[in-house]
Length: 74
Image (tube, rainbow, N blue to C red; front, side, top):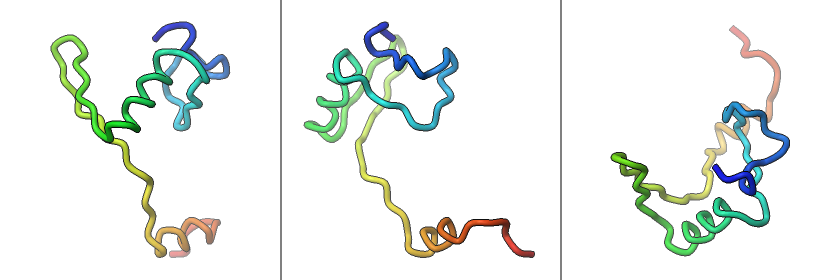
């Protein structure tokens, strides 16, 4: 990862569940290409990955469950 792509609030561990994409840099350009194409094939050395962009979907049942808060009653 280039220094321009690194989010200064992230620790060196790449375990953040939400990542903010910097305004400039290689990562921003990658996501712009992905949005335009919808799907990209990425070759990383000997590994090939298919990356597809899609919107998050949540059922009403899941939304109600998450909105309820608190522990699950047994």
